[in-house]
Image (cartoon, rainbow, N blue to C red; front, side):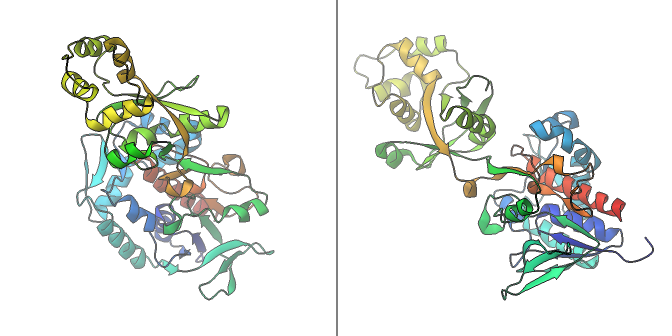
Length: 407
């Protein structure tokens, strides 16, 4: 490049910031716009319980975690993958380690020092930030319209634009899906934003909620009762006042959503003793003492915790079977109806976004040459475990490469 080019990056999350870094390293003058007062808010939120930055899974299996979008994301994931993210972290002074689950964390286990080091680097690269500026669509001349903190509208025309405005989960940190209307007005197809990695609503009785909300169901297996689900997720879902949250429930977001879309109803089956066969459970239950209450029977014979016994009562409207064989079947498959997924603002991430049919292989919008899309604005979803952040990094880097090639 013989002249200094300019890039407008819209959105200050991980996808936007990594795109800004790659562009600035190539000598492009980059300005990042965000409608909040600071950048990286969802990045910090993701690190609240320990910064899971990526995953160490072999690459072929890693790519398959992105389901129907795996083919579209494969190039970006391979070009800037988990090893690259770990090297990038180390270069920022935040070396990583691989946990027992295969998840990758910074050694500090925190997002804050990583973000601070990253922002220092961006400052050294000359990246500018304009905060409290919300993108409001395209002007007739193709420039980007913004509304500033004072309510005044202004337009920006960079040589290239990278959009990284996120999905619609956790709107309080900036990802509110407000960009969708502007894209649809420009006739750019957007798949409907829906909750992903979300909890579910279950109509618990008040008594159950009062006794057990906040309690984990330790080491259970959860599955979806539908024609083609076939997926079982193990772990420790948490009972909430309105339903169930936690890893096993998030892992089933897709089949739960599909069942609700297809049938209007969805039922979950919870196996409270996944490491024992129904016959073994029945054998142990057959040793009931004559004077044992139902709760003592279940606690002494198969070690069920009070919240698990409560789950059995909930699934039978408190009509627990007395026969060991019937009780064993219930322990192995307590069934609950999902009322609905948790609302999108309570989801960890979102499904849906700008459809890949609207983009070329470099993530450039076909209708808007020089405009690129990255992160959760794209139509993909992935499970928790580092896959979400990795795809944001990978597509942000891919959008920057596409922008540089276009320049």
